Length: 165
Image 1 (tube, rainbow, N blue to C red):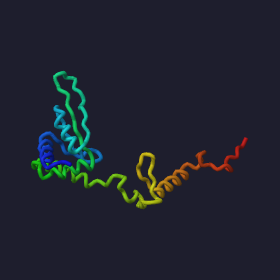
Image 2 (cartoon, rainbow, N blue to C red):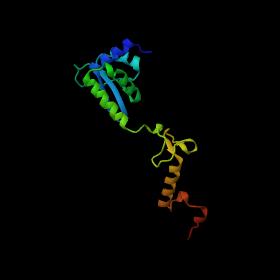
Image 3 (cartoon, rainbow, N blue to C red):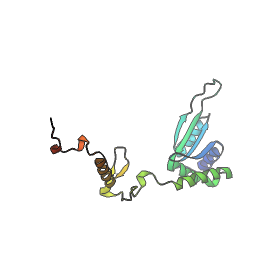
Image 4 (cartoon, helix red, strand yellow):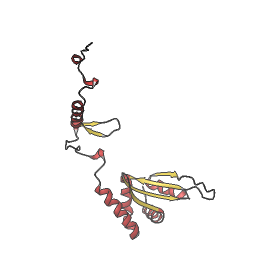
């Protein structure tokens, strides 16, 4: 469990080295630095990923590291550290969380499909990628496709396969 001392340390470190942004699919907290040890300490407290930055062609440039914490974990960390940050960082966090809250939830948390069908029980299908889909909508799309492509060999019955010579 993370101690209060560690939370204060993380707030101070991220105040100086951190970044609070909305990136593509959700909030992102990141920090980059030449020294790996503080980033390892941060990773130990709140997880996240630690990767080397792209190497520079300049031989005098030291290798650098980047720590990143995406998604809802980042939002949780932002909310935890908010009261400990400077006004500028508070504004970054506020704007990031505002954008995050304005977006609809990720597909796995949806309760209805785009056509309004309930995504529960027998109407719920998980595709091979693990994403939920509405069985009623799949049937509707299949019928629309069949009507649009009536001569498709895949859906021609055996009685329609009479060949003429």
